[in-house]
Image (cartoon, rainbow, N blue to C red; front, top):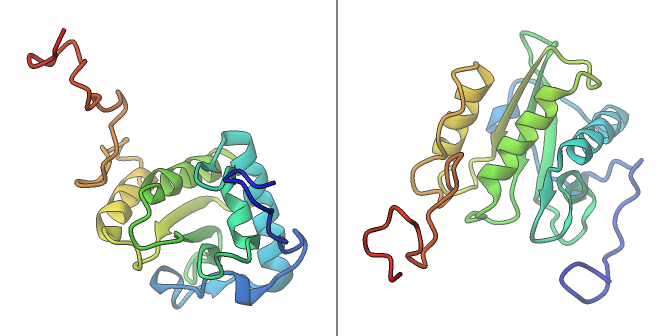
Length: 184
């Protein structure tokens, strides 16, 4: 049974490259050496291990985010990878969320960056993660990811993302001690 109830879909095998079940490489991967076939599968296995180690899970589906590439219900969502054309020691990873308004896209992309940046088993010196332009607000999310990759610190979530900074969002119940309008 799936996390949301009902029958679990028949996922693609972990060792299979099924191009019709993964997103088409987007603009971030254009003009770079996109990984296909065995190269994609080998790297994606490493990505899945990093996501498992660092807890990069899709809360909606209740699974390791890397499994999205193997989910036949979402054939245009998941990760694609490329070695940077001018610097093959740089990995470019592009995340395409399941919908244009995916509320988890930014924290998932940030989590993916952090997990991949924390491990060295992928064999790349530099990691660059971006979300596909199909996401509403992708420019702001990608600006945050670019700042993280250059080490400019941990900028706050993008404006309008609905996500809290490091301290968490005040609740909408009005129970924050700093909220003068709190009912108690």
